[in-house]
Image 1 (cartoon, rainbow, N blue to C red):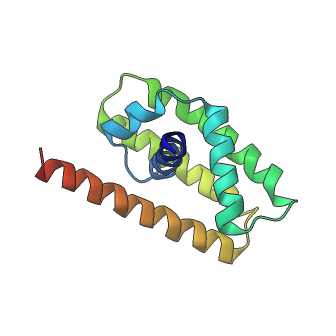
Image 2 (image 1 turned 180 degrees about the vertical axis):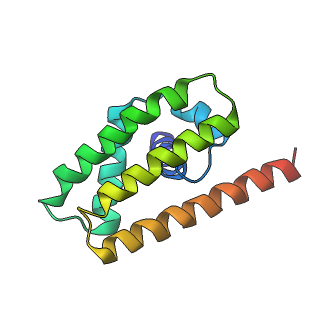
Length: 132
């Protein structure tokens, strides 16, 4: 169960990197590999978006490509603002490629899911700040 929670957190933080780069999230990701992040993202996208057998390998390739591009951002020593800027650029490029593979409905579901996860992360951060 703890492994599932950790993997879900890794996926959520990876999705959110194009929107925000939290220090806690970056620390969690430092202990994962691009392949692990890409596989997890692809599996969850397959389930949540109803990817077709033809879409799965294409989405996996995209997820791996951008997980590898995120590696120096995640493991680098740059400041939060610089990491956030880099993550947003990488996320925009990834979204551009995903629009070519996903249907418009799938892409909207992807964006809505990412926004929901972003809001949940913000809520958790705010809760932590309130309680020490």
